[in-house]
Length: 493
Image 1: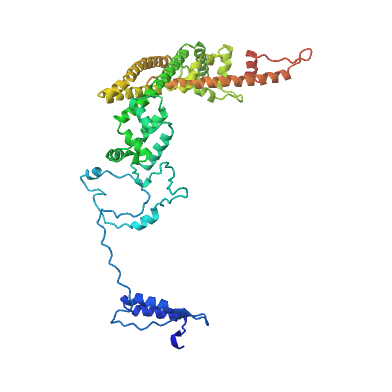
Image 2: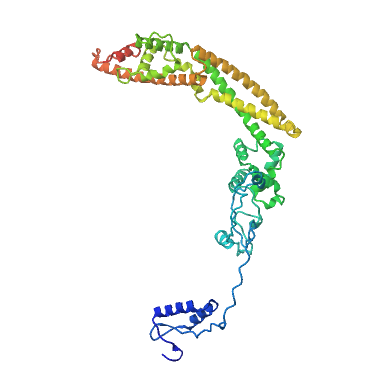
């Protein structure tokens, strides 16, 4: 080939020639050689093969013509501990920083005082990965519209202090009220009841900022209006005098007297139940029936000839099976009780059965809790004239109610001990709750046993009537209910 056409080469030869040229060319002239090679490459329209024009020879002793200027030197490394400045807004990382004084108060080394190897962070990568899109003017007037922010305030100017989860929960909490946060704080300051429910007060106590967050809120010196609503609410809340004591006082106001009323009602039920167990002669006779049956069944053994039995034995009556299918010792006791007209004793123990939802131990625990809360409140405000004036009525009423409860609980203790002694149980290992549960269970099983007997007797009577002789006129002779029906049931057909 002649002139400026160059020589046609195989593509592999072209690549190898370019690589060899790059390897043998000084570093300062590599860029210009590559540029010239790129400009000289053309496409042969006749053969469809790429043609690489051989670049003019380069003189190693002179700088190449049109060589690019040398690259600028790298910037000096950033000083350790001084973060590089961002040029783009990025998402926040909601962590919980450790206060500086806590780090420094340790005498020995810790993770944060050891220092470690300094790192250079790729700021541009952070901006690419976590950068937030800037708002663009809308077509309705060129104003930026931010989601969930009616005022259009630039969120980038807001400072977040609270933990993100806490902030979200506070935001949800505030939406439950139709009043402004300022009005809520005013109600809290003056101890207004009826504004907060028991549940909302409990929730607010859980949402109170932690110690580190309180310090950060106290250190904030800007305009609270620049804070997000949850942060601004907490910022104002912690500035109320004794804000946590006020919250606990409001909660005590809402909870104390409903709890007092429930406890008095439950104590009254249990006292009535104790009286029923002590004075129900039908129940006492049924227990003697059980004693007599047990001594007959255990005669000749170590458990025979007993003068009494523990109440927990009543729960084993239904577990002692009879030879007749579907019958057990509890059914037998019910048959014997029917002979002596004792089947209705559960109807005389109505309060015993109502007491199934009452726990005597819980009454004691709740009383101690209320007493402790009242004492704590009085201790925290005894030097605060404003709070003393505000809560004096509550403290006086609570003291009178607690004294009334104490008298009722003492009576409950005495009557419960008397009941346990009446059944010859050991007070150290047998309590009133257990006693009530046993009789509740026994009454329930006894009534089911009686219902089962009615069905069995009805079936037995019907079967006997079908096999018996018919009266004159074709009327079947039916076994009457009562002792006759029981005899047929026990004897079997």
